[in-house]
Structure formats: structure tokens, C-alpha cells
Amino acid sequence: MEKLNDKDIDPAITEEYDIGETLGTGHFSKVKLGTHKQTGEKVAIKIIVKPKDNKMHMLKTEVDILVKADHPNVVKLYKVHETDTVLYLVLEILDGGELFDRIVARGHYSEADARDLSITMVKAIQYLHSIGIAHRDLKPENLLLKDSSENAVVKITDFGLSKIFAPDAEAEVVMKTACGTPGYVAPEILQNKGYDSSAVDMWSTGVILYILLCGFPPFYEEELPALFDSIINGRYDFPSPWWDSVSPGAKKLVKQLLNVDPKTRLTAQQVIEHEWIASADPSKELGGAKKQLKKYNASRKLRKAALGIIAQQRMERAMQDLRKKVGEPS
View 1: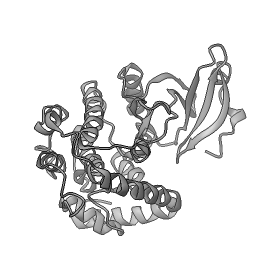
View 2: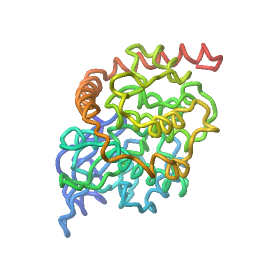
View 3: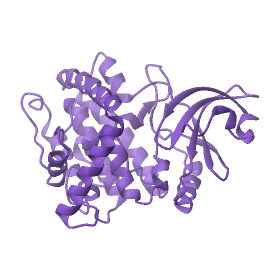
């Protein structure tokens, strides 16, 4: 993003918005605070530089759908503006922080709380799937709160639109996810197989539910080849003492989501109708999960900040080795 200075932002944006601080940066993009000059409304302006080898038809299709998306738990895309070299997305601003941080800060946390958060996420995912959008990159960083109020609304955000620019979109999904939180990638993506994107989202939902219930992820090998192997083979467990008090219904739902076969993995509708969703016990405290989640949050953010380019290089090598192992071209 060094090639695009704030003074180079297109007049179509600067005439309508005052441009403020940088809220975040990515490989192909950065996000700036915007204030509407007439209404004073705050927005997040995502600025994406178009690579030379892009897939604009794919990008435009998904952006067009996102503009129409209207769900209380999905970040709202207000406006799209495009030049020959840059795409501008004007988005609802979310300044309440990550959902996982809020869980750590709260006083009481139970299975019923985990259930409520899960159903909120799954209903939003179901809505997105119904209008033809799969997120493909669900993870803690993309579950944000609208504001800092006690009952702030949870929003699914960051649809990773920049990944559509990549010549190999599937590989870019893996690259982006693995640099910070590799344990959320579905096995069918790692195996470079054709896959149903909606099923990919349900796998990630299973990983997030697992963390909501115990405070740490199901797949957490330090070395990427070992991590990939665990995911591909669905090798995880429910270790004592952290899972001892979790109900059988919750464990059953996790198993049905972390199913390596995408064809028999639960759909969003099946999760909504699941027995545990209807009967989660508010008296089942998850205090231990909250303590573990605090540790996981800290290590996850530190890891993400430290990895950078080194992680990308490791990821590329690991992906090449994996492709050779499964007999696919690298």
C-alpha cells in the first residue's frame, strides 16, 4: 500500500468524506476512518489496490451481492467506488473490538452464552449462503462488535475481497488465514480439492464453537506440516479437565461440524435445528474456558504480529510440500 498516499485518494471519496486515521492494513489494502462531510457519520473506507493479474469479474459479482446484503449481524457495505487501479469500499464502522476479547472481559460465561453466540453467527452465515456469499475466512479477527456498549451487536466482517484478485483464489484463502490463525482452514482446502464454500464456513464455525466451549483451538501444532496433517485427518480430542463439564450435546455438535467429509458436514440450517441449540444449559459455567481464552487471545495476537513475511514464506513452502504429498500441482 506504500504506492497509494492519502493525498492520492480519489476525489469521488474525498469530496464526500473527510479522511482520518488508518484503522488497519493488509497485503493489498488499508482501511481509513472516514467522516461524512454533511451528516458526520463515521465509516470505514477500505482501499484496495488492484494487482495487474486480477479477477475483476469475480470481485464485482461478490461486491454487488454484498451491497445488497442486509442482516443485523453482517457488516454493511454502503458504497463502492472504482478507478482503473483502486477499489474503494465504504463500510459500516465497528469499534467495539473482537468478540473473544469481550468474552474474556465479562463476569459470567456459560454454555448458554456460547450457544447464543453460535446461533447468532450461524444465522448470519445462513443468510449469506442464501444470497450466494460464502465468507471462506471465518476466524476470531472477523467477529467484531458494533460498539463498546454492554449489549453490542456481533458482526461478521472482512470478507477478504482482496483474495479474489489472486491468480489462485483457493491458495490465497489458505495463505491469508494461515499467516495469523492457520487452525481454521477446512481440510478440503488444504487438499486442493474442489469444494463447497458453504461447507468450508461450517468447518470454521466448528473450530470457533470448540474455542467458545473450552478457550483454545482443536488444531494447534507449532509446525505447519503437522498442523495440516491433523486438520486433514480430523485429529483432535476433548482433553480433560477442560472438557469434563461440557455437555454431550455440545461435543456432538462440534464433532458434526469438524467432519472431514464436507458432504456430510452439518449445514447452517441443521445447526440451527440441533438439539444442543435448543437445550444449552445456562447453569453450566465455562469459567475455565474464559481463562484459557484469555491466554489464547494473547498468544494469537502476539503470533500474528510477529510472523509477517516469514510466516508467508513458511506457508508457501508448507503448501508446496503438501501439494506434492497429495499429488496435486504446486
